[in-house]
Each structure stands twice: as C-alpha cells, then as structure tokens.
Amino acid sequence: MKKIILLALFSGALFCAKAQNKIDPNTIKDKMQWFADAKLGIFIHTGIYSVNGIGESWSFHNKLISHPDYMKQVKGFTLKNYDPAYWADLVQESGARYSVITTKHHDGVAMYDTKMNNLSSVKATPAKRDMVKPFFEELRKRNIKTGAYFSLIDWTNKDYPGFLKDSSRYKIANDYGRWNKFRSFFQGQIKEISEKFNPDLWWFDGDWEHSAEEWESQKVRQIMLARNPNTIINGRLQGYGDYDTPEQNFPVKRPTFKWWELCMTINDNWGYQPQDQNWKTPYEVITIFVDAVSNGGNLLLDIGPKEDGSIPEQEVHILKELGAWNKRNGEGIFNTVAGIDLGHFYGPTTLSKDSTTLYLFVYGKATGPLLLKGLDNKIESITTVGTGVALTHKVVGKISWSPVPGLVYIDLPESALDQYVTVLKVKLDKPIKLYTGQGGLQ
Ligand code: FHN
Image 1 (cartoon, helix red, strand yellow):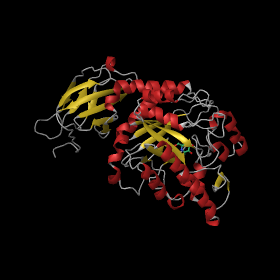
Image 2 (cartoon, rainbow, N blue to C red):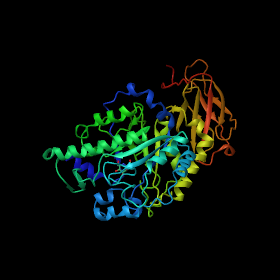
Image 3 (cartoon, rainbow, N blue to C red):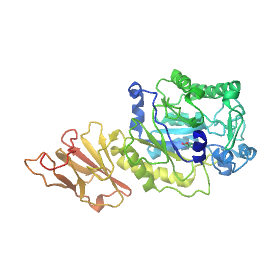
Image 4 (tube, rainbow, N blue to C red):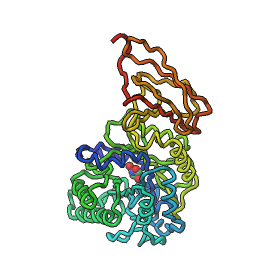
C-alpha cells in the first residue's frame, strides 16, 4: 500500500530522500571533504526522451505514450553535435566543482557502452557513442569531480518486476530466480561503470521500489568501494548512502543531515522538453544556491541537453550568469561552512572555516543600514566581496556593564550592490562569538 501511495505521488518530479541511517558519518568524514567544499554541481539528464522532448521514463510508465512508441526514440538519438569538451567548459564556467550525468535512467537505456545488454547509446542509437567516457575525461582535465547517476529501476528490462504504473511483470516472492537474474544484471552494470569510469560520486535513483535486502544495498555499496574506497554515494540506496538528497523542495529549516545536496531543475523538467519555457532566472538560481550553502548544503542544478547533444541557449545563459556571479562572490561560498542563525541576521550567511570571517548575503536591491544582532566580537573591517567597497558601521545600544552586545548597523550604498546578490565580508578580531540570550540583566 505504501508503495502504491508513493508511486501515485510521483509525476517524476517530487521526491524527498530518506535519511541515511546505516552509515556512521564519522567513518566517512575525510572522503566527504571535497563534497562539503564543492557547493555546486551540475546534473545532466541526457537520454532518448530528448528526441520527442517528453518526460524521462515517466511518460511511458504513466502511459502518456506507449512503451513501444517511447522506445522508438532510440532511432532519433543522434548526438551529432555532442561536444563533451564544451559541456565540461560550461560546467567549469558555472563555477561547479562536480557534475553528475545519467548513465542510465528508469527507461533502461544506457548512455555508455554496456556489455550487459544491447540497450545503449552505443548499440541501439544512430549516435553510436558512449557519452560518459569522453565527458568524464574532459571533466578530469579541468579538475572537476565526476558523478554517475544510475537508476536502480529499469522498467524496460524483462526481468525487472515493475513496468507501467498499474501493472507489474511478476512478484519477487513468486519468482526469486527471475529477480536474481535482474540483480546480476544491474550489479554487473554497476561493476562496469566502476571499472570503466571510476566515478568520484555515485548518484542512485529509484531505490523506493525495493528494500535494501532486495537490492542487496550493502553488497552494492561494497562493489563500488572495492574499486574506489573514496567514492561518495548519495542517499538513495535504502540506507547505504553517504549524504541526503532533498529534491526540488527547498528546506525551510536547516536540515539536520551532516551532508546534503538539493537537486533542482533549471526549468520544471529534468530532461529536455521544448514546451517548458519556465526557466528559473539567474537571480532565482543564485538565491536558491546561496540558501542551500548557507544551510550547509550543496546545489545540484540540472540541465537537459537536446537529442543532438546541444544545450539549450537559456541553460547556457543561466549557467554563465551563475558562473559570473561565482567569480565575483565565490569567496563567500567555496570553502566556507554554514552560517549563523537567522536571529542574528535576517538573511543567509556563511563562515570561513576558522570562523573569523562572516559573510552576509543581501538579496535584491536592499540597501542599508543592515542589522547584525548578538555579535560578541570586534569588527576589524566590512567590505563587499564583489566590488571591494569598504563599508562603515555603527554599534548601537551597547551598555558598558552588560554582557549583551550592541546592535551593528552596516551602511550599504546602492553603488556597492551586486546585480543579483551582494556579499559582505565581515572580518572579526577572533573566531565568531555570538550572544544568544534573551537580553535584559542576566
Ligand atoms: O524519477 C526521477 C526523475 O525522473 C529524476 O531523474 C529525478 C532526479 O533526481 N529523480 C527521480 C525521482 O526522484
């Protein structure tokens, strides 16, 4: 019943990842450091669904198109303008430190040269190309970490129990041999991807259809770690992943997960759909990004290339604007940690790792005076990160005999504002000390 409700909720858009509960964060702390510092990744949904420009996998699962008609798209997948170096350049220009590409979505069509069956961009489409290999090579040349998205669900595979939304092929309990056959198949693909591409990060999807025991999640984790003990695994392996992945939904309160990443579409869909012109603006993307980082998370921003391998111009524009903003203001983002509570500053903040610098993020056209509360430090200087303008401030209401710090009002002239989000760098005399009491005499 639970499974039916979950599936009903799906239109391929909403999903909130389960907290990882089987992996002790202390045992993986070191390998997670690059991920914690990376802050931004670019997600790429590429697949045959871009031929008709329809929903990735879900369109046939939800019976918007028949499965045979959906699969006919393999014949139109040409990749004739696929330029992996350009893709990697674009990822780099956005400021992202990692990129995750779909090696296989729920439709079962591999985007690499799998030897486990013939359903791949290499064997089944006119592209006759492995997309993953050259992309990873180009990313590595640019020092960008590589991520492999892999769908555990494989609705096209004849040995996979699930198929259309209201029909399945069989029940595992009634045909364990068949399930075992599928398990050898998907685990074989995971071994292949490990051996061929050695991803820095694995991004599983679709674990909700079966339990950890059924997927053999623990064994799957070991397959990947045997090849690369440092590889990072997202939290969609029924409790055997390293970090959590809220999807499309923005956390309002700071998540309690140790490591997390918000995955989000750049318009309303994961893959290329020409009718979807509901692009998020650069301002929206940047504020969402800042929000995630200020709460200790990453943003994995998704794009959907066309069947010929070209990237829609609106996506290029947004990635470039994001990159230009990162170039101006990245000091307040990369290699920082989550900021202070909203009670101290009514906006997002981050801290340098030694917490002697506080970064304040000011959205839109707001100008000062901005208010900082409960800061029990001496301020050495305040400047804007992007434009390097020195700002003046005033401490108000400090009572000499009281331990309660005064209010800090910061002047922010309009001329110092960033086009999107302005970042202020507050240099402190020592690691940040905050007063969190209730005021008064205590
Ligand atoms: O069903 C998929 C969906 O198509 C898309 O791939 C997203 C990306 O996170 N994940 C799934 C649902 O959670």
